[in-house]
Image 1 (cartoon, one colour):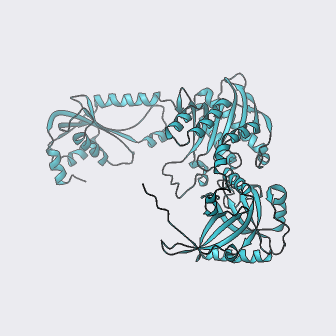
Image 2 (cartoon, helix red, strand yellow):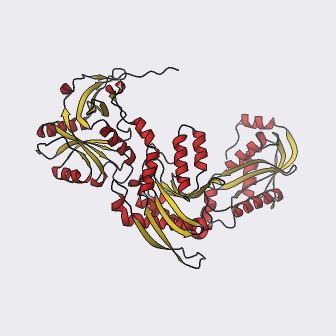
Image 3 (cartoon, rainbow, N blue to C red):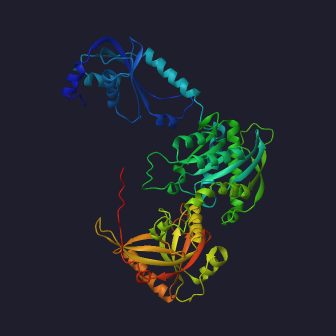
Length: 545
């Protein structure tokens, strides 16, 4: 049996011993309506109360697998660091209702001059646990029990449909329900940026617009952003990260379906945020998610295109079996809203223009690294001539002239990022007159380990140079890729290309398909000698306060 260190015993014996009887017990945090699994998840509650004064001196919640040492740890805190208004003290007598706890405490506390007795009932603790049970029984569940399973199934169906692979947040879908005092919901899909995945169901178009406008006005102010967030009027579904999830080593998209935790809730200017749905709200979300899933299934190919088409479809949604409604189904119409999407894009247009390339600014004559997003997927490869013909017909294609179709295809640099970022990259290249050349130029870092680099550069028609990749000279994978790149460029007499693709957070991450390609820029391949800028040196930027 584990016992106190001698120094600990001496410290506890220095506490004033008061003529009080303390009650102690350990019980499951139970409720008459909870299942065994719920109880095991909540664990055990350990309580120490001063029966003479009627106050709680110490309380802990521990796993049900935790050993009897936990009872002693809580007792020590009850003596040395009790809950207010109690003062540090040592009791004359302790009573428990568990024989095993009694014998264990007698062995551990034998040097502290405390009597350890047994009583079959502990009136004060019994009353406290009855109160806890009443609180648990009166708690409102996150979802109405009769609809909880159906809602989670709909949430998992949305996750598997993955609408964020092809729908941006501003590409709104209207869901016309006309029931339960709801006319039309406006669905915004979150997730294309790879930050948070879910569906926002706005109760009005005005609420959606006001939130977007508020975010643009106050994007630098955390307090104002929170205020704008709480002024939304919407229902929501989000997918939360499970406990102990490590973003540095894992991605939410890689988790098995069973480990995802869908969260439902409501936001309203007068209610704030609550992660609870009541009966009518649960039915509204059920119908919205089911109709949304069907719409995505039926029109996935059309929604995958670069444009946001005008599409509408009517569905009859069967309600869950336990619904007490005269009609057991609801007629719902789901439609895309390209005009609203264009309007929302215009709201952020000013910010995009500020970030666009300005050729008249002399600062842009130096090497820049702000064209290609940092988290992009990058590869050197080749596109077959047949595939190039398909791309010529189906995506934004910038051609610079006839080329010699020799070898296995056109050597290309592939940049894969999220759809919004890909659109910005394309717009910025177009704003600078298009792509002129692709080059690999030597670079050196004389301030760190003296490493040498092969720097991937893009040159636009206005003369700007943009960094798209840094590769160690001694990286065998890159060395092999560069050999193939040089040979292919030689075959095509210097013709090469840049492909911008979306789908970084989707199933095609790292392996974009034809439908993910958004633009092709033909260019010339330049050697470092042709570029004529010599070895680029890394110069650290010092910041002074």
